[in-house]
Length: 231
Ligand code: UDP
Ligand code: MG
Image (cartoon, rainbow, N blue to C red; front, side):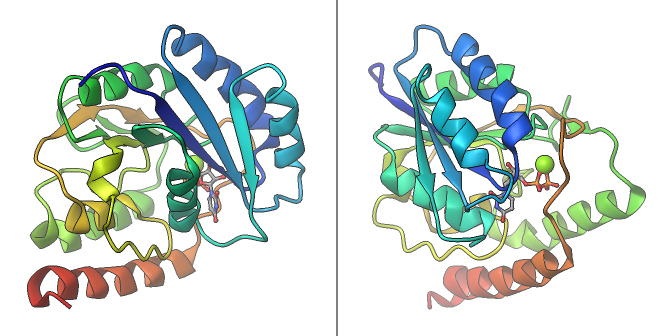
């Protein structure tokens, strides 16, 4: 693939402290790349959008504000739809996804992969600082998705793809997990998984709550039907 424009989506909800660190970091890592950052903010009460708009004076950042907290997966898809790049990707705002890895992920797409996933569950990957309970839930969620995909970390929130993978796909994102839906419904052949360690959140707190587990169950039912019953 010839050198293409890269769009990086950062979904945010109350991440004003983190975004101040992350955007300059990404800019220094992506020197020489043709890229844009699209912040999708769900009207964070802490003023994340304002902070991001300030950063946009200095960095190639666009800020899209949605009307209230509409969910992570739909925020990412909204970013993808409004992005200008041929290569699309997403990274969490809270620095739990190592920004340095972004070059490897983007380069995989430039080298011919359709999807490049930062993966906790390939050799060399892992999670730091998770309770036994959260590890168990994550493993359980992945087991339930096993018949849907061969990817080892289909729940990853840190991934890049060619726009053509999702062009024309009927994505109906609910809850947290967009990648799994893309893996079931997208058009692709080559997938790369690159190991990473999911580290501690820098500032603020997690927005993941129990209702997301129910959303995930509903998503699974939908995806099993889509894959095996073609409905
Ligand atoms: N996020 C969002 N909307 C939501 C929930 C989360 O934009 O409804 C963002 C959040 O600000 C962060 C990323 O999605 O940038 C991951 O969320 P979080 O860190 O809360 O999840 P965890 O890392 O605990 O799974
Ligand atoms: Mg997080």
